[in-house]
Image (tube, rainbow, N blue to C red):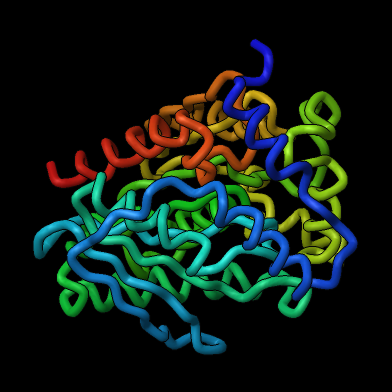
Length: 304
């Protein structure tokens, strides 16, 4: 189908992601732009900022809307490993906590180019491990921890699920991957099919990767490209959300297919007419609420 009218309006208001700016200026412009496109911010019972120990202190924000012993979603924001913040994702995390009747831990991992791979991976893993170890203090169920994120954050969620399986240090019960970057080693056909004009461009993707993964050999590491892990069996059930007009849509489909072939319960929902950042643009795009509902259904279902 053609671009959805809501997506057309979001593109009109925001345009393609700018590249070539200094990191601090890009982050300012990006946040200023995206904050105007957010949906309503709901109240939740508890919101507090935390500092999690790691290689460097990891800032995080904890949200609770569910009762004691509820599931926890550890959420990693998008932004190409260069952008995004606790502030920008405050609305989304509140909405997921409310809709999922659960708790959410939003993780402010280190960003490139100041901190290149694998700094973000280590922060994501350390934060999730800390949450599992401190489940009692957080009043969540250590056996019902999901990892999730959008774009770069979806990459980190997929990687943490793989690393947790290998280490056995904690359990991940679900993975929620919103148009994740799963293979930074090569281009898929949708890189060219959706090259520009849909907010996330092919040029921006390569720029993000060049800043996060300046060593080309690192792009073959499954911690950067979870698609390249040989054996995907044993991973937790996955919800994958993708968008038709996204350069990443073909690799999203490929990762969903590989998970399913490995025996992992996988639900892949591709939103027709949608663009890469639609999940966080609920002030303009109605399908963002539909995507939230899919995620919240998974989170509420974890109680069973």
